Image 1: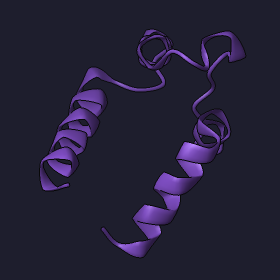
Image 2 (image 1 turned 120 degrees about the vertical axis):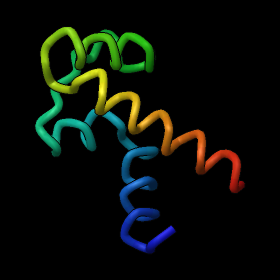
Image 3 (image 1 turned 120 degrees about the horizontal axis):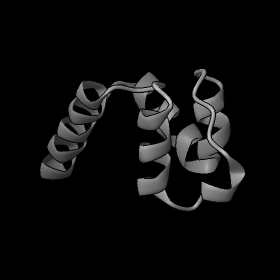
Image 4 (image 1 turned 60 degrees about the vertical axis):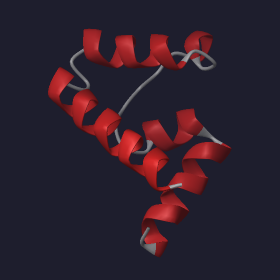
Length: 67
């Protein structure tokens, strides 16, 4: 992984809601601990598309296979 990507990942892990908000993705605090609800909220509100989610999920699977 490039160093920048690793740094972004660490920032996301430390404070996911802040990281998302910094990219224009707003998530209510009451679903902060529910990844599935966050994804559903972002898709329901047009903040991400199904294609964007699919792409991110595919990248996550590839990272898991390498590790």
